[in-house]
Length: 266
Ligand SMILES: O=P(O)(O)OC[C@H]1O[C@H](O[C@H]2O[C@H](CO)[C@@H](O)[C@H](O)[C@H]2O)[C@H](O)[C@@H](O)[C@@H]1O
Image (cartoon, rainbow, N blue to C red; front, side):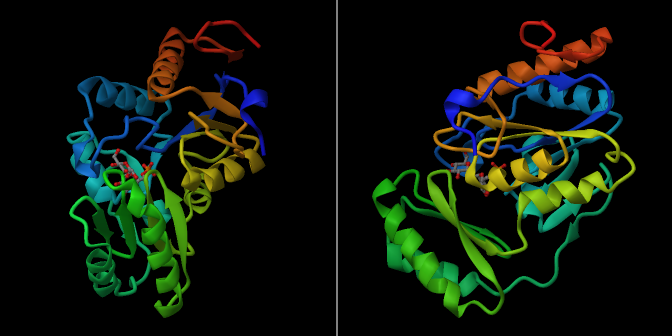
């Protein structure tokens, strides 16, 4: 685990590499509600350009569903692992593959909603995953966490509880960003490329570990404590600037290891 003091800003190899991107808190500033985030045309253009430069070796790795991601980024469609890897779209225009039958957690969502009894708590129903958002009611986070932890024993298959950003999520054990990244790395478009992963959250830590094992480049956005990532960028603005600088360097045809924000080799 690294702490803030020993994390450095990342370099990116100019030879064969591929890119994995978390969305909320990495590419998009957090908003009061999941539907309130805004995707600008500049971001769409940046991602489309990077995807082209990387010959398609770019994928979103997100806790959102792929349908929700498509809706947010439309008309742009990219390769994606959604629901923390319970869904994959391995080619840009291909089908969404979903992991087995989800447990029926609809009733549980109703129960938790009634128990919390606050219009300020938003329960996002994502098929096999429940996300309980307490951004507008932070005093209810502890109770929400207790409720999902208590529910674990009643669920038919292995579930776990993961702290989210201003909330908590209940998800199947196999939902993990590291496994989602590995799945892409087995594909011809990604194989033999060095993985680069940008993320900002607890759920991204598992992805950083996977990327580190493959001698990749793990980048935590705005870390607040120890992280498995080896590099840091201070916030969404810095992450977007870094990606834009990398893209520009690709267009310029530079070679070697570069620090894209200041152009110096390291
Ligand atoms: O893996 P990510 O792409 O980072 O997605 C993680 C979760 O992001 C969304 O929730 C978070 O962002 C919302 C918008 O800023 C914010 O209102 C909420 O408090 C955050 O937790 C999304 O709604 C979840 O489904 C994702 O799992």
